[in-house]
Image 1 (cartoon, rainbow, N blue to C red):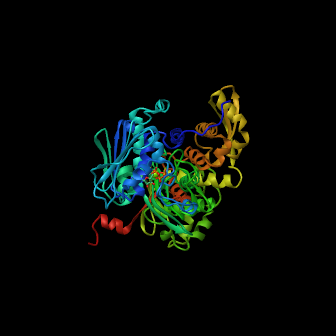
Image 2: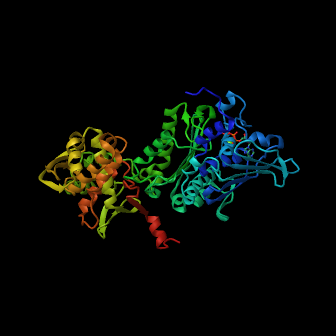
Image 3: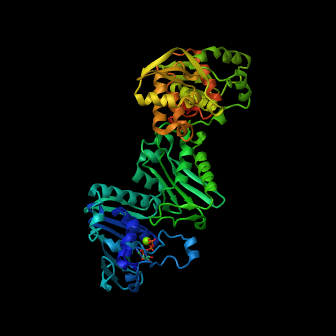
Length: 574
Ligand SMILES: Nc1ncnc2c1ncn2[C@@H]1O[C@H](COP(=O)(O)OP(=O)(O)OP(=O)(O)O)[C@@H](O)[C@H]1O
Ligand SMILES: [Mg+2]
């Protein structure tokens, strides 16, 4: 073995660069953070060939003094902290004093800067390490950092770079994250000499509309919560604005974009009940707290954080989001509470809707009772009123104290079934009903194996599935609430879930998605004619069901048109 020796400075920086400078986008991130730390109000980004040829950031911030220019490129040189106390309370985005040095070790760097009071700018260049002497240059106050030919001296790393289009995509992500966090600043992005984005200072909602689309902002709910030194603000996408990919989730801690499992988990939970299956919420959220309560010095790239009071932070974020997304704020335009007369609760109890109803068909059995109630106490109209008619097999029209209620019967029924499955699963297992004739379907060998392995889980979910042959499965029992639906399709979707996520996940983290998927298979299909008693039974079920104001996919299930809405429609009383 060769003897131990101290590594040369350049090699040390190149090793460090491995952690900080992964690709052009990481260079861009560091340069933008420096501009923000310098108090810039206007930040211009210029990229060539996805940033591989050039990443340049111009700012109008505080600038760097002539004598500090070379130091800025030296390792462990920073103006941002001086002591351990500073580190523990760090409020700037940078503090390690190594970003520029690392970049200079693997690229050509040119720094031009002018302090506000200085008569002119100075310029230094560095190529693979140490900087030259500063030379006078022309520039308005502020700083321009140009990084060219990334990895020109480390060809092994250069091989890892992707196409210019891919690298540009990563740079755009970095730019978007930064510009979303600081809507009060002006930003621009040019790629290959063409202006790609130009943003003037604007309120957050407008900035989010410009970068994430109107679809998100038009229905987004404002978040504003504060408790015990924690503050959460921003925009929470309504369930309607959910996406199929998790590509619009922006979480910032003290202004820093982070990918944090704890925060992501809190957000997932807050939306879980409102979203179905693979739908991903969209959000732009800012958590602020005492810098001493969070450690950002976990990894050189600083996208991970560690909270001192992780549980408290999780609970705070979860509840703040749940409140912002609560049904009264999110779903139907008229709040339930405002409609329900004080006497509504006992009236509902008298209807016996607390008892689990077997299947959709069983609405018929209970349907006579609302009529009796109406006869006994005609003045006490239930919140959603009494059904008048069914429209095109899709909507129920009902009359309540305030006016007309429109119900999407498919969406409403799906929600009811979902909540019922959830309650019974929480109480132990879903109530099963044996099928007179088992439903047999073709399955892959893997599905057969999964069905056999997961007997107890399936039983908990109200299913009994066994092999009928090497490539055939038979459903012998199904959840009572779903037994009348397409049980084979139901079984298939549950098996698919178990195959992808495993039983433990399916019953815990993904329980609501699983149940929502199951509920889909039972709900009243459109174009099914309902009798008035059946419709009334559905309305009463809705009143007794939590969160029935929106369906599992986040769409509203009912809508109130008040008499005055109708009067306005007909220009009455004007
Ligand atoms: N755009 C800029 N405007 C003003 N000063 C700058 C700018 N960019 C860099 N500097 C100065 O150069 C120093 C070194 O920057 P560098 O990014 O290497 O380290 P840092 O920001 O202090 O820490 P980190 O490594 O965590 O980013 C900074 O501390 C700052 O004083
Ligand atoms: Mg920095």
